[in-house]
Image (cartoon, rainbow, N blue to C red; front, side, top):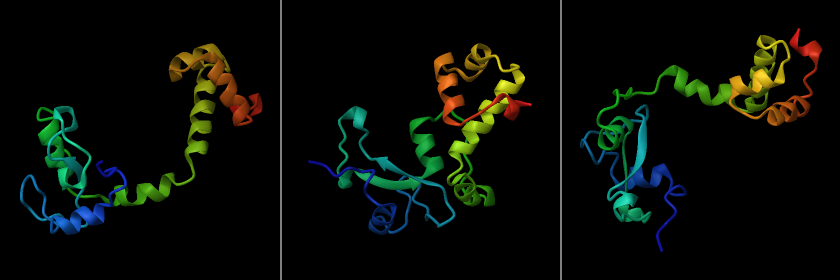
Length: 139
């Protein structure tokens, strides 16, 4: 039985592979965006065993699996590093703000809000109650 690759730490693979991207052969630095890759793809019979996993640059991973897509950045930006802290614990606030914004645009019409959000009207009503949103929040 293979190892659950999601539980395999990046550090373990990084150390095993000597910090080298197994696709391009270049060094992986701490600021590089990287991905855990299956050497033999699962769709082609590959396993989640650690021997079938490797650490690679995100851009190399993307080129391997999606060669026709636009290239990704290869370094983390200040925004990427700060983003984790920015979103920490704010998903609920983000959802509430989005719901308030859409309800404002639809003048509290939950049916239209549901269409804009791509969810059911029932779900809109649930989220309004969940976030304790009132008409006074909208205006």
